[in-house]
Length: 120
Ligand code: AMP
Ligand code: ZN
View 1 (cartoon, rainbow, N blue to C red):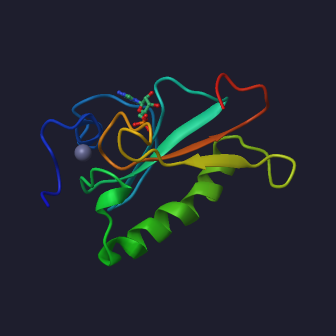
View 2 (cartoon, protein in one colour):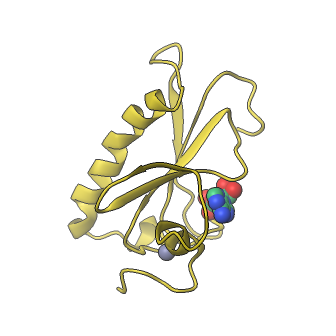
């Protein structure tokens, strides 16, 4: 699989060709705020490599996905979510059309902050 897709909006964000509000970046992960947040805190963690969705994951991606999932609680606190258990956050990974996925570059939504939320 090619590591970037020239037609993918999230690949363009990762490459800096489309602006975003960046939260975090390392050699294999990029994190930015959702442009249409559902909650007071709403950012997305994405692999820099273009993986269309969770459906394409292979055992080779286990460490990468582990890093993404363990980054979520740290960044949630950094971005203003209150600590567990009174605070916390929600993680959502929409996958495929029936899964509600609109952008076909794997992304892990992290949402949190005081309720009520706009959605969810
Ligand atoms: P999904 O429905 O899970 O594919 O989520 C795609 C998300 O990407 C939506 O929540 C959008 O608001 C968000 N989104 C789309 N374009 C941008 C953008 N240019 N910058 C930040 N977030 C975006
Ligand atoms: Zn992409």
